[in-house]
Length: 239
Image (cartoon, rainbow, N blue to C red):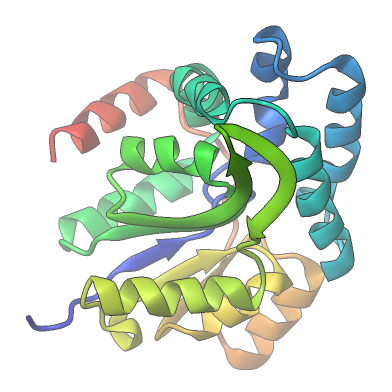
C-alpha cells in the first residue's frame, strides 16, 4: 500500500474552544458522577489545560488530578455521558476554522486523526462524530469496570509524537506529506513530526517557535453555527 497524507488534530483549544473535560462538568454533575467537591477540584486543575502559560508540570498535575477525580466511577457511565452530551455540549464548541480544515482534508481524501491529552472516553465519541480514522488520548486505569484513580497513559508532550508515529505506521501514512494542528508549546514534538505543522491560536512559546521555524500560524476564534454543525455532522456520518 502506498503511504498517503493525513491530518492530525489536537483537541482542547485546537478543535474545541476550551477544555473538553471542563465542558462536560455540568452533565457529569447532573448524572451524579461528580460531587460538588470533586467538581471544584477538577475545575481548578483542568483550567491548566485552557489557560495560556500553563507549565508542563501543571498539565501533568492536572492529568493526575483528573484521574483521581473519577476514582470509583464506572467507566461505561463516563463514556455514556460523553456520548449523550456530544451534540448539545461538545460539537457546539468546535471552531469553524477546524470544520473548514476537516472538510478540506476530507475532499483531498486525507484521513483525520485526533491526538489529545483529554480522556479517551471523551475523545473517542468526538472522533466518531468527525469521521476520524483513529484516536490517541489519555487512558485512566480501570479495574472491575471502575476507575482506580491512576493513569495508565498520559498522552501529552512527546507521548503525542510517539502516538503520531504509531498511527502512521498502522495506517500507512506518509508524515512528510501530512499536516498537524495544535495550540500549545507542549505539542511542539507532534507538530515537528509532520511536513506541514500548523499552530492554532498558539500560546506565546509556540508562537515564537513557529515564527523561528516558519510554521504556519492560524487564529480560529469563532465557533460554528448550530445549523452548520448539523449539516456538517450529517455529511461526515455519511462518508
